[in-house]
Length: 327
Image (tube, rainbow, N blue to C red; front, side, top):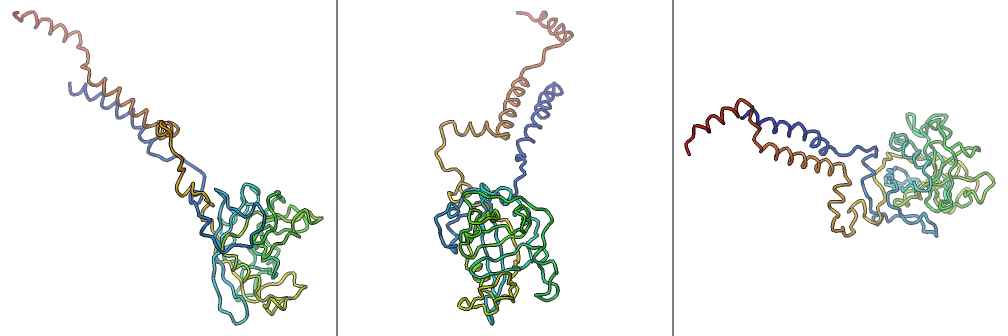
């Protein structure tokens, strides 16, 4: 009898193992871990000058970059380090933002320097050729014209423009030649917007949310064509100045997504319905696995409690024994 009773138990184990194993494994996803980190925009206080633009508020789920920089603001000043936070507008510039995210995740920008700085206009970087060789300013002869060799099309959206702090893609005369180089507007620069130009303009795709004072300091640093570093004595003809003191990107990394409503940090705070728990359970593969496992275990456990039918031989012996019993 012991051997027969072990059969249902064995069946229970074998039949429930697939469900238990399946329910214990989290659903596979291609999303990077940083996508699950919600960031509070209220903590970002060193912002650009506000303007009437859809670019001013943060939007739930937009990718966020942290850029650490090192620079010397002016002659005789100490080297400083700072952190700059950039929100990317993925909903309006999906191609451009994906290009940027891929370059950041690959480490392409780590260790390069800002190779073009114009006070009251833009600070430009993003060229992987722009790294010091030995002692700065010694660098590659290709610095300023380098990239990855993979270009993206010009991507405009009516919600995007060159507000103060906007990040845009650098390009050549060909509108669809943007690669890895980008710039940050150190003031509003609407002269670069497509509606104000005859060459299709330039594409913006994000904005500085914190650390704008560091961008302004880098813009003021003395350059090869504006050597004073004094705002009152700017060279009006400066167009391609390279900082005299290296303005370096120490690192760039994806750190999370904008989460102005706390939906990622704290979850959906709306009141659940009466059947909310069961509905959520049924909508997940884990819940389905658990439910099926419980049903199978219950059925097999019930069947295991029923004595197996007697064989013909055993039934014959039992009937014979009952005939000898006196009533």
